[in-house]
Amino acid sequence: MKKAVFQLTRVPGQPVGKDELLADLRRVADFFGATTVSKLKYEMHGRYAYSAVSRRFGSWNTALNLAGLTLSNEINISDERLFENLLMLWQHYGRQPRQNELGRPPSTISQGPYKRRFRGWIAALMAFVDYANSTEINPPVLTTDHRPITGRGPSLRLRWKVLQRDRFTCCGCGKSPAVTVGVELHVDHIIPWSKGGQTVLENLQTLCSLCNRGKSNE
Image (cartoon, rainbow, N blue to C red; front, side, top):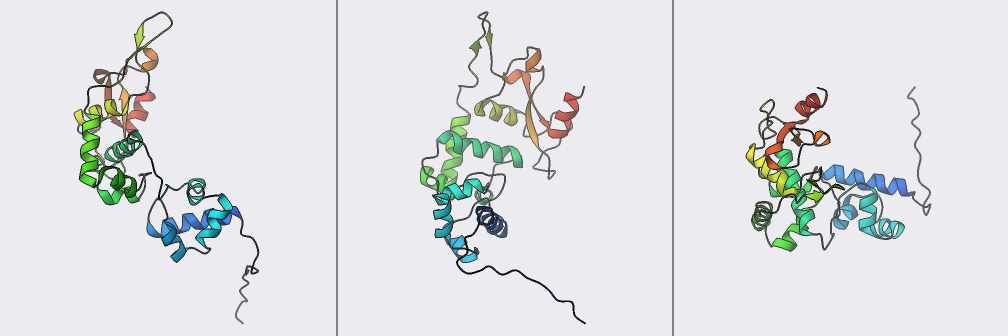
């Protein structure tokens, strides 16, 4: 005798919970292998109307944000945020990122904002390189006893210079994400900042996550 299969059905008109809506947004994003979902794609593949999602959360972008997705149509993103996302991708892949990689993790910004700001992908990369190669790096600050000291976290420009100098390769084991999938690069102090090491080019190096973890255990 065939075992009965029990299934729940939603009563028409019954309100949908916020968690269900957010989970469905993530489901559609996973379906496309993307970090965001446009209204059109959700209308085609979502279980609910996109207008219902927007009404429940006040806006489509608010819903995407709460679902942990990137914004599909965010406007007025600063150049610094656009460049920070590019550097993160460059660091993740160990090479110049490709346009289609904006649509999947770890990118947090889709292609649209770059196209609107720079009128093209190559123009966006050129603007990033010009910005990152400029001379301003990490200006020192004064301590209470008036000694100049740099902040702990290297700026975007300084991280770019360290990664470029080290050819996006770990100075410890020689691995690079461009060659070995899964390698994660970090910019690390040679003399720890907590022990007086400055956040300057000469005191920074590129390490993979494993070498960096091993160094911290010494």
